[in-house]
Length: 419
Ligand code: AMP
Ligand code: GLY
Image 1: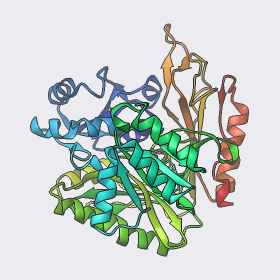
Image 2: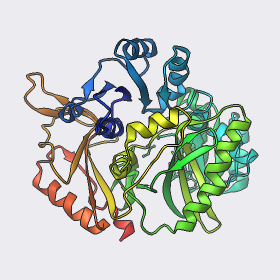
Image 3: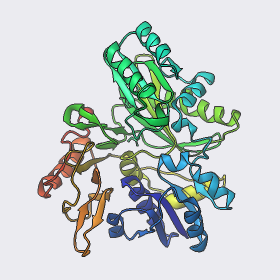
């Protein structure tokens, strides 16, 4: 069987590498992918994620059995609908089902309608009304651009002035373009954040290990928000009841609600949750796998990933099994300056072997082909599975100390909250 993965980051590297491990998979193409993936025997296809008809032609001419869609913007652009219209199978939600991610107002309205616990909110397109609401509610308060904003559309404001300024940026000054033409203003929630993923098909769902991302750039959760600087799974200090409550009060009613809305959900459902004093509540939904969470979750899958997805796509019960023991932890190495301006072209250390996996994101071969160079904000990630968080940290950080990371940086405290 030949498969195609759409996307180019560490997430897609992890998906494609896991698919290639399946004995029935002879070849995995990644469009457009990144050069680092070729070190794992993946085949790059030079087609961008928005070129749906070229991707469809490629999948047809190469007898691709099905395609796994990585990024949210491709889903929001209706890539799955286009594949299906062409008679091809793709794993990911339709454009209408993916609205759970691409419109925060839609996601909130679904949660309200189906009684899913989340922060109290109102949606505004008028600045004066938004300002009046912020002044009435007081701070802290959270202001979110309605649409996709590359993770930058959320302001957790500690003062009323900061919240009003954020609403002004989005509604009056158009800083987020169409994504900020509406804003969701919601209650500030406090508690520990974690992520819960499910493979879903209609009302059926299969829960993945819990994970915790580290979104801020620097140690101690300081600095600007990023795509994610490291993660681990499962979250050892999260009680089993919390996971069960999250499934029953969040995952299940949302999937049932989406069916009732005529938008059945197929693909990965990613719930960003916060454990408040009143139990788990939703911070956001994403309509796809997380990056970097995928890189630490998929190594724990002990069943045949390609068969699992084939079964879900066929509406059959997949036999999905996970590693029970230990923890999988990964640290992202990024370009100095990320998430703001950074240099490209830094020579990367050699790919690790044996018990540490290297997943590549922003990596490209030098023109003469000799060396792998940095080519993006998040560059690569080291991932290992060990008996404990501490043992995993030691192995990864020992390795990172041996590597030449000049021009790059990483957090030194991934997983420390679990100690
Ligand atoms: P999001 O892009 O929706 O994941 O939001 C980015 C980050 O903002 C989250 O990971 C949280 O740390 C924080 N955040 C979002 N919504 C809230 C909220 N209602 N209360 C507290 N923090 C929040
Ligand atoms: N790790 C956060 C995300 O994928 O959105």
